[in-house]
Length: 151
Image (cartoon, rainbow, N blue to C red; front, side, top):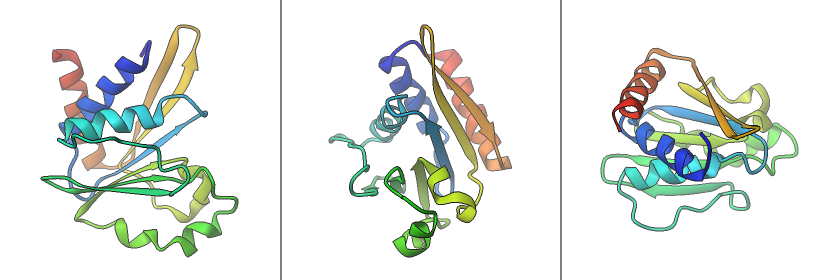
């Protein structure tokens, strides 16, 4: 992924397989493209407005046509116990799609995601490294990869 446009495109192809009950974790350094990827996904799901980073609010909810999407950013967590006190656990349910930036800040308190994408810098841009943790995550990634090759 050489630039922000490619990162937006990755988010857009992930939208094709996005469904209720799925969880996506995004890992990577500051500025590696996590929020850009989310922006591409949310816009592809039909949200016409601004998609901002929830770095300060910790959560940005999106009521989209086909699902409720919750975009979390745990960068500001200083201790994993903050996850326990956040009240966010209720959002992780079969009716919601949850995307978490900086999940490692919640330690082992978060359940494994269906899909995880690690974004990191390369000499020419960015690299996205996916990891699947469930059968629904595998199907989600397969749908995205089929769209990536055809668009």
